[in-house]
Image (tube, rainbow, N blue to C red; front, side, top):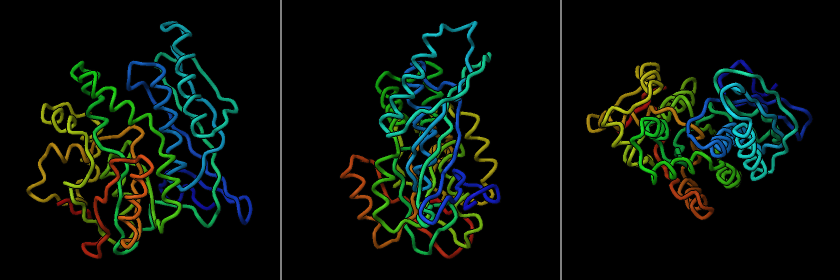
Length: 308
């Protein structure tokens, strides 16, 4: 076992041979958009993301379904599965089975197996002094999803954030394989700062974040100022605030976005300072348009996050 229960990471990794290891992960959740097909796409992209964050390639998947058969027509389930299957095909992943139960609350996701060379596994806890941190998707999907549920989001931003959540991290993972990446995770339920905290803890280093460089949906700032902040963001803030120092200029609405629980968020990559800008350029050349250097690894204060 190369990565197991002894430390929190995005997936488990089991060594099969000198040149092959299995990555295993599982994720499912309740709908965050009304369109069943797009929900299936987002849930699949989200589950596949953990394999990409470990530096691997997803190969097979199994459906996990909880469905209220007495309340919804079976056509809804079929459409959800079609969305997930189309996203798996895009990723080059084979669906090999799954399991379903009848449940009052709809849920969908995947159990995913991926491949990686044992020497190329990326974990959260391998920051290096001076590394630059790169984020590949904008933040704010949780806040905007709250606005969508409240009927306050425009059609344009609803489509934009849905498309972002349904976008695979496949391209970002492919691009970063050619660069000296030391650590990686994906920004999901614990929020950008929550997942960054997992990288910092036990590393012996601190991190400085330039808040103005972090890609954010502008609408998320607007909705946060209106109080449309999901409960998960407050929980994330309460859990990690003790190790985070905010500069006075970082407004509370932006802080809320930095703690916002993401669905199918981007990769957070720690890469050698000398190659960071090259990696950003390579990502943008492949269509990861918002990729940006958002911070750096520093020696002091140890295991703290400075947001400036």
